[in-house]
Image 1 (cartoon, rainbow, N blue to C red):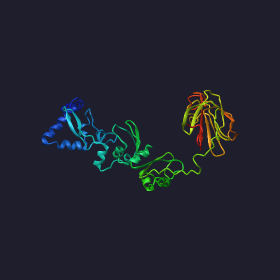
Image 2 (cartoon, helix red, strand yellow):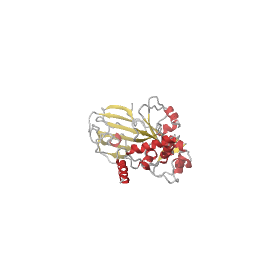
Image 3 (cartoon, helix red, strand yellow):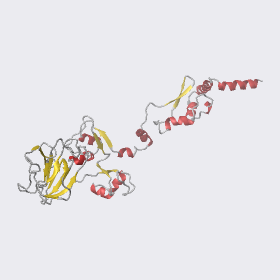
Image 4 (spheres, rainbow, N blue to C red):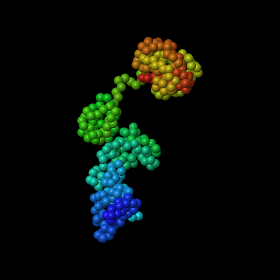
Length: 366
């Protein structure tokens, strides 16, 4: 009878609300007797909490490990100690310093991931920044920044502007069809093996259209020299060209891109005359009302003259000739257009003719 009574008491005690307190009291008693926390710390380091299996708050090995080993969480330097709170709960104690991945790598003997050092940075210019200071800040050459952002040494930057910053001095290359690593290296005066190593390529053929390569130590080649086999301007007699519009007309804009003038009689639909005899090269007509249609010229045509000079007639209402057709000087070839928001007007701001000359002086230039 007495044995049964003791069993019932013990059985009920483990179900009572103060079960955890009783167990902790026993542990504290043992600690006090031993004169130190060696026993308790040993148990904590071994993560042997089997004596708490009946506690309402169970600390499993998995949960205790995940608190400082799980890679998805911020790592700790070492396993935590434990603190008794209000004599009925345990909590882990960790150092207040949070260890970053870089510091953790240094502690474990591992270096910073290489990928971090090989990325292209998009930098937002801050007040006080200059191209020279950014080159020094990122430890790359000034030319590297200039090449990556299509700038030159006289360019200025302003706060809020975005700049592409390569990870090392060199060139950024965008792979296109037909590119070969050896030819890329030759173009930028770089070494094939360095390109392969820096970009982690398995072989010279391990590149694809659209890839972005870093060319360490590469330099942009100078622009090729252009040789002109004929004079930039063919000397013409004063009467070689006639006016493409009947006088009186008004020049609304003097010489502008490309060696052209704008002239008008004030109305759309006026006849346009061939300034000289020749063959019609092309006729481009569009139904678009966009200002950027056909490069801004809108409806236009060109004529190749026997001496190699080409004349351009733009902002046309329509063309009256076809490509390949021979025309004579003074022949009506088109009608003046350019009325804003009409098909084929291009960037015109009103009814006028854009008359350009390539290969000779524009006779109407002032």
